[in-house]
Image 1 (tube, one colour):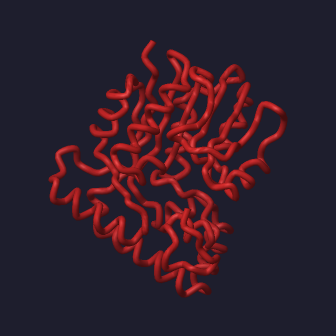
Image 2: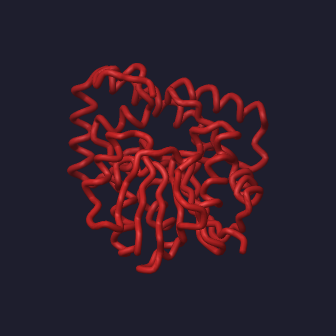
Length: 262
């Protein structure tokens, strides 16, 4: 992992910059699409849940409200794993430092797996590895949920895809490769899943209305003050917002819940 100083905002991946400024919801469809994904997964007290890349732990807390039998977070960043562990309580809740493409968990040891804003940042080969790993650790009939950035419409041109990929990767400092909704469904089906439920939303991560919805008024004010008093971070965030706005008609957010075939 690239080692960065706390104030090295120029090199940081975009989501790190936002997190350091105090943004807690970093998912493309906001907290509402996250909540819909959790509802569509129908997590109960009998479920063994695995979350890939829990990050700041926002979705983990929503999951734990359903009192699953087991919760395991898979986080490659030790600091993020420690942060999520603060919300965990008891032997049946853990966050371990590992990789989503090779978790080390037993085959068919989970009934629910989900991840958010993660697959978008991976090349095709790694997308497939992570989805395959989710399939491996799920029991037959288990549920897999994703919440990712998507490209619109399904017949978007290859030229526009490449243009968006280039500009997103430049401003986010991550090799972002979002797919169309049909492509997200296809890659899940190719890895042994049946599509159950799809939810969509605009990709308004940095729009003021969405920020207020996600962070609340106090959180939004705190975020605004931090951005205004940190010039290098402000520059990065404005660059990201400019690209998001430029391609707003082509960018969206999608959550898909799929079932592992029996």
